[in-house]
Length: 152
Image: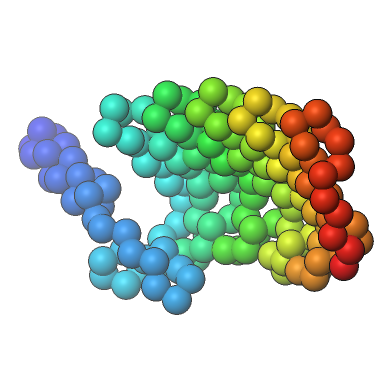
């Protein structure tokens, strides 16, 4: 009897884990329409972690992290009920920082955004205020000197 219960439990769990996840109206739902909850991780074809995040009522909430095929972090940041918030960073497959951006509590671009080239050299600086471009935007040449400035 105990073995039978273990088999049934395993089948139920396997069926739950194998469900298709769909995003509908900004929410991740199961194939039966129920908003998903909990920590979600997806593995890539090689079996290593592709991304990890948490859901509350079908919306991404808390830390988000994704990885390149080689295991190096690709993106990391946070969500608040489906909205990107705070500082987000992206990295190349060799671990070089590519961008550092930020979002306010409404998910609008906010603060200083920086972009680096594949050598890790700063190549652009942009400033946002609640989604609006402001201030002096600068693009830099390979020597780190200002190549172009746009005023907003």
